[in-house]
Length: 402
Ligand code: SF4
Image 1 (cartoon, protein in one colour):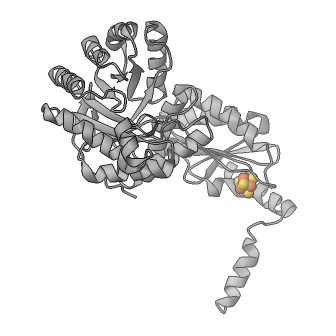
Image 2 (image 1 turned 30 degrees about the horizontal axis):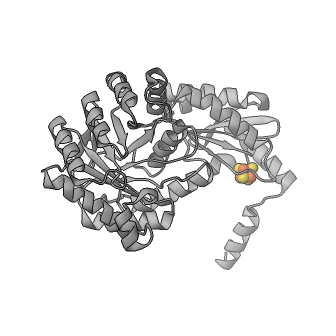
Image 3 (image 1 turned 90 degrees about the horizontal axis):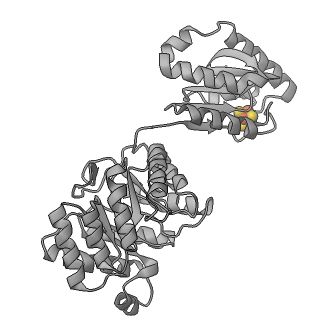
């Protein structure tokens, strides 16, 4: 399925393009004190390693702005300064060399202050995100609408944009975040019809996983499927590396970014499972993530259905009776002892990444597929054929008049 992106203006956050036809990007935010340069930089590196293309850092006082001056030149990804209340800190962040600003219209309200920041950002050639947040909506708009409803969020963004455009500033991206998923989706839909600027998606204050993850995935995915959204952030109450990873993973799953790391698929397990699938998956995930291979790996609880059900995976392992059946693209290539399953899987994954599918299929143990089939037949005999394949085939033949 191809997602048709909403046309939007292209801008650059440092060397990262946002909007237009550029790939959808992942953002995250540090949780350290910005003045603590080493701790913040260490977190920026972790976030970049987790999948963040752009990192936002709070600039909440002069020490933070000074910290930014040291962080920016040493950062592996472009840095955006997050500004609330004090417009002078936006000017200081620009002086520190940041690649972008995020302004909250609810917190910086004076027109002349907003315009002063826009002029300085224009001179520095950096974009501004107009970051509307339902929890800190402009008081006048809150009074007018009675609640932070979607049209109120959109009005807040449009009002701020008008100030920026007034001084000839158009390097703008916008977010209208809400903690309520339906309201968030509706806000972005309304906004998408009104502007051509790129949109930064997020469910604000989504909370800890798993609820926070589910809210973020629900809101962000809905919009991405509609072609809305140019950059995303999961706002989780968790280690920010988790939100960077989750954002990246979501884009990979939706086919919007190339797979950079492991995609582990696994069966949910059932009464047929010959191993503790949850434990094997945990062990395999830890070992495979350490390898950093961009492949899809399947862990299946039984050889009866495993290799067939996971035939699309690059590589996988299915449990037999005290054995592991290693398969590549659904073809069993090796049988190993149960206690060697994870080790054999990682070893084969490494070889597959180095040598490719054809070479590894050519190196297959020719007896492995027959052994797997024998074992599957034996297990079906012991456990019964859950798919009732033989009975169904006979019934189909009878109906067809054979
Ligand atoms: S692969 Fe086997 S163990 Fe896993 S869910 Fe399917 S039938 Fe059950």
